[in-house]
Amino acid sequence: MKKTNKKSAKEKRVLIAALLVAAVTIAGSTFAWFTSKDEVTNRLTASADYGVSIVEDFTPPEDWLPGQKINKDVSAVNTGNVAAFVRLGLLYDSKLTTAGEGVAIADFAANVDNLVELGTEASTSEANTPTGGNTVNGTANEVTLLQAGGTLVIAAGQPVSPSDDWKVRSGDDSNTDDYSGDEQFTPTEEGLYIFQRTIYEEGTGAEKIKYSGYYYKGEKFYALETEPGTVYIAGIVTPAVEEDENGVVTLVDGALDDVKLASTQEVTIANDGDDPAYEIAWIKADGTEADAGSANAKFIRLTYVGNDNTSDDKALDDVIIDIELAEGWTTNWTYIANGGRIDSTNDTGFFYYNKILEPGATTPKLVDSVTLNKDVTQEAYKELTFDLSVILDSIQITPDENKTAPSYVEGVNGAEWGVTAEYDGTAVSWS
Image (cartoon, rainbow, N blue to C red; front, side):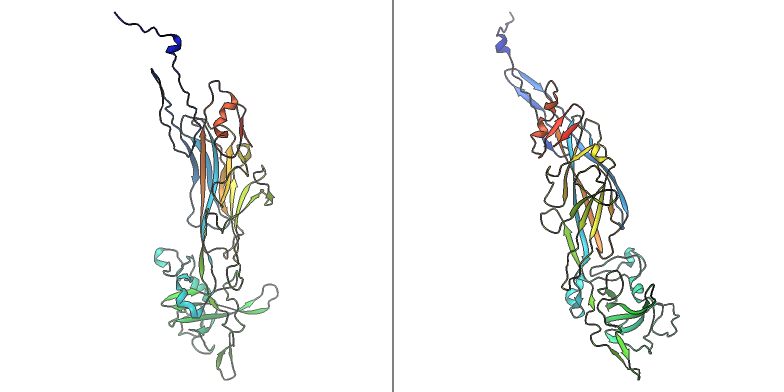
């Protein structure tokens, strides 16, 4: 005879624990199965494919030029089957090669690794790129530009007579004196080479004598420290050489005292809590400043202020980078200035999505493009690497059985995001 279990309804009651989980995760996490056991096993399976990812359209340029806008569309997509709250943050790091302190010619050997080597070919191909030292690649023959139209007045550190065959211009070799040669002047001895030009001021027509040059050693050409915005040497006395009635050429006393070799220094801007850091400003479409997170803010402007870095108080120009926000971004995102920082220094904080991100859904864009500001000059940097990293945080939605609006936000409000969310059944508001 089959035995019947006549336990009371109370005894038959099985307690099933509902596991309401609000876990802060980075995109790509998954949940395990949840089980609850009593006298009788009831298995609750939470076969959740919890995946929220960053999606972007971005092709980095090989050579980023001032004023060049680079498309970078940034959104978040829910690739799983669990609804989620999301927030995005922007981190930025840079490595710059900037102008360093000028090096006295007498200190060449001790500083050669930091000196700026000039290119000698009108190409950036590997075969024509200078090697050794702190190379700065260019698309022009930099040595030719420094010689162009100039008369050689200092060769291997010594004055040369305008009357001898060392008087050359760009396009001439040292054996011609008619300035019609088709070969480039090439030094043979180590030392400082200076070329003199007569420059006519625009508007006034006034004559000015200017100089350019390089330091030559071992078939390599090294740049000299120059006046900002020109190829001319700072500090040189005018004129550098003089010739008496007998044709004897001498160097003007003190003419080369301030001529120095150009050097570079490496600057790293990182999220380590230390200087240097980018200054952050929110900018309207018309270029004026906006309040952080306001609807009329079009750009987040990052500025690395070139600090005085030399003993003679030569200041570096600023590096300015504009992150363009998507059109109407405040309709879809809320920026809260005190809503937490991603890292120590170089970040904006977080942008909170104004809706629940349902499975299969993609947020509207937050970022549209990144531009190296057109006002950035050649004195701001020699080489620049800029990394814009997008950080995604997401929290699983776990409403109660009745799906009341307050239950939707319990997890996110308990997740230490530093903000409070409210849900009205359609939109999420953040404070």
